[in-house]
Image (cartoon, rainbow, N blue to C red):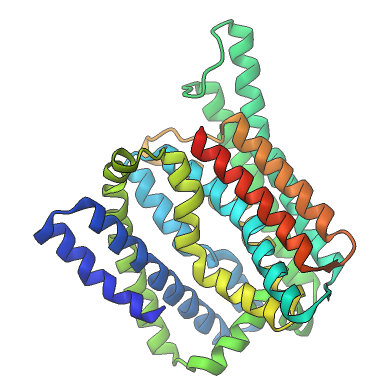
Length: 361
């Protein structure tokens, strides 16, 4: 993926010389893949240089840094529909697409695979809680619209909804912090090192690059700055792509953007499944989903409040239904503590059906 860094100068050339929005979108999109991978590696090496608990906390809170950077840039540009769609897309990717690919590839390579049901159940419970927090604002606004007899609208502006979203966002962040407290203070340090998927993933990567702390800090700063700039270029060219290919911002945000920003982490999870480490693979995907739902999305609500963009936790009924069903399905698949390529194929079918629905809507 390092070769994809070549798309950074190509994106700049597309912007200032060719003035081609379509080429600009493609180049900046490919550059995000490499930059998000570098950012993730730098965070993991820096985390390794600290104590076990501090490192695990760093990985847990900054694991979706690339996704957060992109959504903040999009939020500043007023692309609220794209931001909310990317949140749903990242959740669906971690709940359906990534486990599906891991189970298919790992199942074909290793046959039936086994994992720790307790760890998966804990993450699934957190996801169920977060889905409740994301669904309730939608139900709240539907009931208010019905009470006011104004008809049902998807494009809503309601001060009560703003307050409700802020309240739920605060509660979800508190629950997320409590989960970190449970993980990093109740367990012993050696258990953290063994069980935490980010730390285990980092140990594999450390053998590959052996970056120094100074180099990691430089990569962290550099990749963050370029991520901000490339995200800004990508967001600026979104409207042209939508008009050119007749996509909606929702479809673009749900399908394409999350794949670009999370492909490095997805690659690691699939690699672990191929190595018959399904415990680690599922933990990476489910913990990432929990972080997005309990930390990234609520944090964006508060950021939008200070930006004056009025983003809420109101999603379309189709989005919340798909999200709820995704949590239910991954719970059903992981209930027996084992997986195979057929179950992965079933998850993939659900993801494809959802993608077709978002495209047609």
